[in-house]
Amino acid sequence: MMKYLELVVFALFINNGVTARDSFTTNFIKHYILNEETPTQTIFWDLCWDTSTVVKLVNELSKAGFRSSTLMGNNAPDYLLHNVLFLVDYNCPNIADIIFTGTRKKLFSSPFRWLVLSGTNINQTSLDLLMDCPLLPNSDVVLAERDDHGYKMSELHRSSSSQPMIKTPRGYFNGTFIDTRPHRELFRRRRDVMGHPLTMANVIQDSNTTQYHLPRENRLELQFDSIAKICWMDVKLAFQMLNATPRYIFSHRWGYKQNGQWSGMINDLHTGKADLGTNCMINDKERLDVVTYTDMMAPFRVRFIFRQPPLSYVSNIFSLPFSTSVWVAIIVCAVVSTVTLYLASKWEANLGAGPSQLDGSIGDALLLTMSAVSQQGCFLEPRRISGRVTAWVFFAALMALYAAYSANIVVLLQAPSNSIKTLSQLAASKVTLAANDVDYNHFVFSLYKDPVHVTIYKKVDPEKGKGQFYDINEGVERIRQGLFAFHSIVEPVYRRIEDTFLETEKCDLAEVDFMNGFDPFVPVRKDSPYLELLRVAFKQIREAGLQSALVRRMQVPKPRCAHKVSAFSSVGILDLKPVLLFMLYGTAASVAILVLEILTFKLSIRNAGSISRKTHK
Image (cartoon, rainbow, N blue to C red; front, side, top):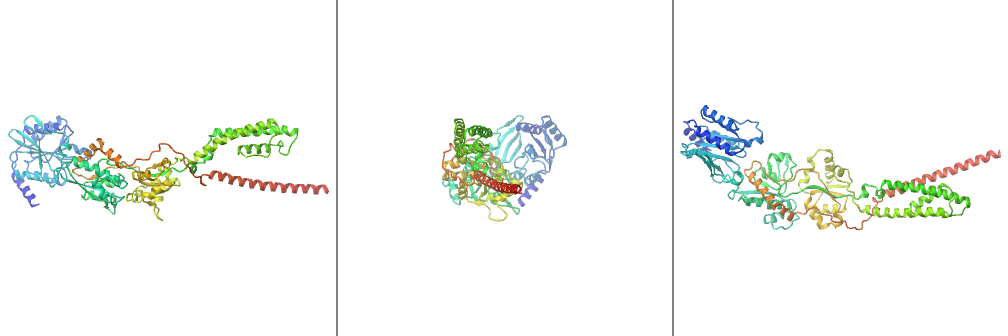
């Protein structure tokens, strides 16, 4: 601190005498901004020039289509900050205050740009004020030094705060502006960080053995922490592209804010222990205050995974084999058959009656029709050829319908319902809801306040009683048994399903998204000087196909049902619920009819007795 104050005093002493800049300097500034080929708002930071020179510079920039001012507004939108170019003159006496303020307010980092003018009378000790600044890889500071031939431009930056300043030639101006940069993109000029160590925080939650297998990249125990392993491999490639030394630490939590303090990976980034972390879901807005998301390295989804309930659980399968028009046609045929049998039996009764012959009543005709519909025999039958042909045709037609009906029932008993497609349908179903017993599932359910999410939260983690949290092996086994929805990252669940499920059990797997969030992205420490370098490196890895190759090696996609193989399926009471209800209603109706018949019989006897007594009187 004392050395810095001594430099400030020395700079003030050196720069007491200040001369106005000439037209050559204003012409250089104009050509410099034009060469940038980007929207620019020039900020004249405490220039000690005379008024006429400043006005001339403003006019020249205005004619070229650029804005300029003496200060930057406090309410400037963030998306316009990349237009700002600070113009400072090292010959001005207040240069020390400018450098101190810029350092304190972090104005030497992205997205701000700087053009520092330097004359021939600047002492090297005074230049140390600028050379001691934290000009890291995301800074864009150009030092323009005046000599007898014009201006010679150099870029200043450090690969890290502990490494010396790197002075890279940028070009010169001798009346003609010459840009000697090999690439205009800042990333391509700063991608070599000279072996600076970059640390990644890796989140592991499945097994502690990941701490051994992850740095070795041996592809062993892929069922554990595949997301962290893919991210590490991708990030290590990015480190090699940037010539950075890879470092790693481990955390057992993604990171959530509790009592004002961050935990897990987010805390490692916030405190500077790590530069970037394992990609995570963007479902917590508070994280945006401490981290910046870059790109997706290891895609994963967090879903409720379950098998669709059988069709018999949600529909009356005994009414599904035929359409409404077919049912109507069967009823019409039954009515026509009843009427035909009634007319035939009426005609036969006039010719003589037998013990098993229809007596010509509508009741007997209806009884025979119902026996045919239910594929049951009846002791009553027509005796003449016309009635027998009618009964045979009706029985044969219903037999064909009965065969088709039975075949459809067998198929429907094994068919999934496909009835749960949305989160509200899942919340209203009778499916048991549970979650993987890992860190994030103990936090994400409480982040949502709408009624549907709250209902699911209360089912998974009720206020009273034990929460429905299981390890991945037990959760997958319960999925296989059915009527169970398991909330987890789907990729490790599918790996377990491939190992334990039968082929027929994979055909009715379904997913429902609870979080409804964005894809996961790699978090980087807020205002990290390596943010842009990492972002571009990640995109190059993704565009080259390296990321997708690693994902296919390490992750298992959703099992496909190429063809549904027929298999034995047991029938339970719930499958026969409509039939049992029909039998129950029929039994209740028969008892009611019996009671009515008894009452009718007793009333008839009483009426007969009353008539007999009146007759005797």
